[in-house]
Length: 131
Image 1 (cartoon, helix red, strand yellow):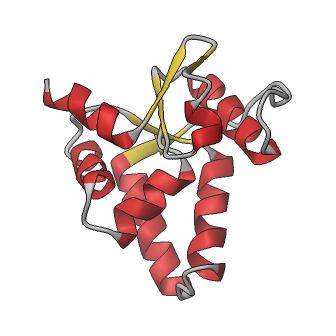
Image 2 (cartoon, helix red, strand yellow; image 1 turned 90 degrees about the vertical axis):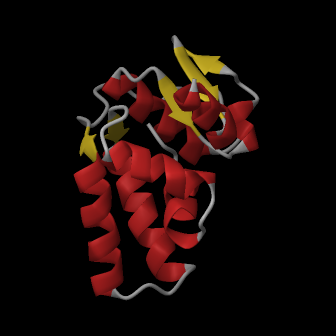
């Protein structure tokens, strides 16, 4: 699962995150998307980056082509992060039963893992994919 910041970077830059999204589209790994992250992605793309509705819809369509949306979490989000939104990201990763949560968010990265899910940076995930 990619956090919102990774998805945004994939669309807004030509770096590692774009490369990872390309790998997901080629099915080098299974990418799970949670409803919370998709909603946040749409909001930030529209408000902060002034994306038009068509641009936002096109970006989301590419994400949905690259990955599959997991079910909404059945249980309450854990309360372990300084930023309450990050707790929802952890709940989404748990609901998807994903192996990795890829993020650039230091509040999540500092955890290292959550219920068997490894929390790693895009650079570290790319290094694992290159092996």
